Image (cartoon, rainbow, N blue to C red):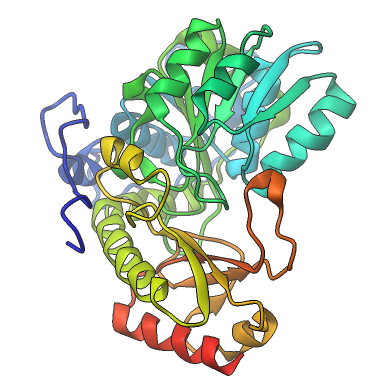
Length: 390
């Protein structure tokens, strides 16, 4: 491995059957008579003992039918939950969580930097249209979170490795502070996947993922998932799924289930490649800063070491002011100038503005990179030639 702190340890993974994560990802959940989970296309189903008035898939515990149910069983197992609900995408998961857990007049605290869609919910729609009070806090500063929680709060929401600032939050400390104040802790674990971190083991009430990213892993399926342990939390979220829809389509469920079988192996390569590429760019003459949790220069590096098997496949870097980021993107030959993440290809998203976004801890001339599974030397060469041509 690139350094001795980038570990792939298993002491925090709690398998009900005593197996390693890599084995559970392959064997847990579906055990049918075929070599892969079948694609069940029916839009209504009747289960033994099911007497509800709504027999559409969105109303069942395994929404969308047995294919989605197999994904729920597997993710529930890997995250250490007692229930899981699949959704059509990460935003559907987020919407169902917010509308299930929050009501008019409630208060929610969110980290200063989150996924762009989450920022829109918190900065615009939730306060303006739904009457939810929102406070944004730098949760890397636990004292700031503690102060914010002196006002009664319903939900504390964060991404442990934040999109796109690459802040890393002390997971257990933030969850404990939320609980001490009587709030629920909701964690978006998309950037890390359950292979690198299981927030439920540190007391999180709800964990969500955009499975479109690392869990599906190949840029060919949109999906989301919500996982938890307490039935009292599941019920209102499940009700929102019945009312709002947004269930996972069978074909996408099949693709996610297939992707999950190789999650552990892909994440090891993502982490290894990201470490090497970040180290390469840290010494590049046209790069002024690299933000990767695996680098000792990252301000939250030691906190990350306490929690993670590896430091993930995501990092950010700042180009020198004279670099034309549009020209750099056009000059890329193998890496893709792209807005998603978690695919097998290396994806590069330039923000490009000279001011940055200080409130989100996004510096000027910032570029976000989702490091893929290619040979790391080929990634070096492509980024180097693109930087030098710009």
